[in-house]
Image (tube, rainbow over all chains, first blue to last red; front, side, top):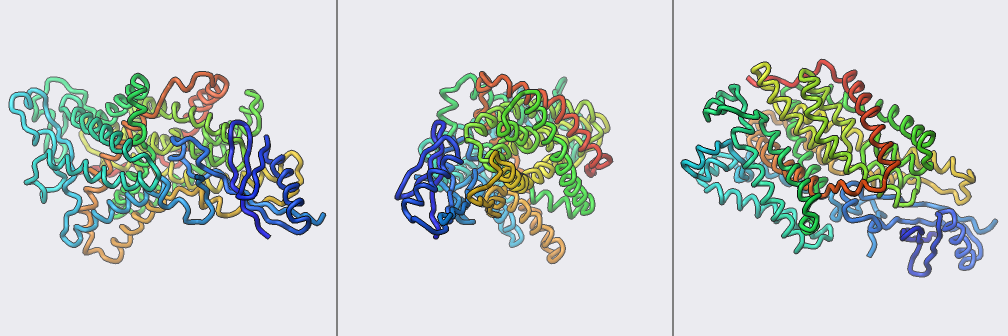
Length: 81
Length: 502
């Protein structure tokens, strides 16, 4: 199963969201932990592939001319453990 | 509203990088129409060298401006200028629309930048600034205008003047700068110009193929060596002596040692640093690029007037951001050619020194994606927990998303010219008629837009409050990167000389 999220950033926090949920944390490790918790509540068990696409609109307008990409993440959550 | 890169084709209509490719390829295609005897580019206005008292005594627009081809010689110079304005405004506005810019602000900003750029370009061609006391293409304009003094800076004066005007606006008229900033896009303008430079590279290959390949390979090798030396040293110094955290040291190392803003964003993305870090580092890079751009070309010209290609390549490794590097390369090209004419009475063909600067930088641009990819893998394997609990994978698509797309267009243009040379040699003569205008006047005009724009967006006051980073940047740049970059450029490029025009 695959879940897609948009990854964003505001002030000093990472934000991971889709139409169903929004997770906010100081670090990406914390985001992953909270996301795992959310996935366990939603799916109970299984192997979930998660794709996170960074929202480049978070960068200032003048920055975008230099590089139009930050990063995407591809994670696998094994909820059977 | 969000902008994400999910599919390989994302950004094709919404990023400046892709629009540089589209606009450059469109101008290139227009230029090729001369193969079928259609001149679709000769209307573009270009400045003429003029002399103040001569103009005052007998004013005529035709002394200041002319069309780029004789096919349009009946056009009034002002009509040529207005037509140039409408074409560039129209085409860039289409790009601006798809990039989600505010079109009202774009119209205003571009119109002001266009007007100022042309004003400066005309002023910069006044004979006391530009004319060189030597016979070039059968004419000595210095003697022709009967000058008693002159700076003899060739086209370089227009570039420097344009930059100066931009910097004055950006630093002393900030309210006005904010009103025109929407259209001050040096990276878009310069990358479009670089695509057109692919035509020049094609023509250079026809003239001296082994030299051109050697130049391209030497640029790649030099960039690669520079990478391996610069990055670890800056990272070590940042960590050890400036006590930067891992993320800041890595982002700064890429920014200083690789290719400025794009490398710092790519590296920060690869190591998943908080966006605030690359934004801060980028501000530093953009401001310092201005110092490099202003200081290095005249220094290299005077210290090593007989090493044109070495000097060009050294700029490529030292000046950060594509815009500043190409701009510095263009100034160096003009200054060194002018100096060589004065010293030796012979004219190097223009564009070779600039190409040396750009080829080195382009390889660096290409390596950014690969380096970031490697760094991302290293970072994941060495994270604090070292467990990679959720089996995070780095996708190959990361390289593609970070790959500079204008380079594809630049290479495509070069390859198409090579293909013409090998498979259709009989059309080369006609193709070069249009090609000379697109890689000549079109490219130079885009350079002029770049100079003014880069000045407008550079605000020196942004350095305030960045003490430690600023000190490290300045030390690393002038005490380490610039001298070592020059040495590497010398090792790989010494002995290379541009062809002499007869």
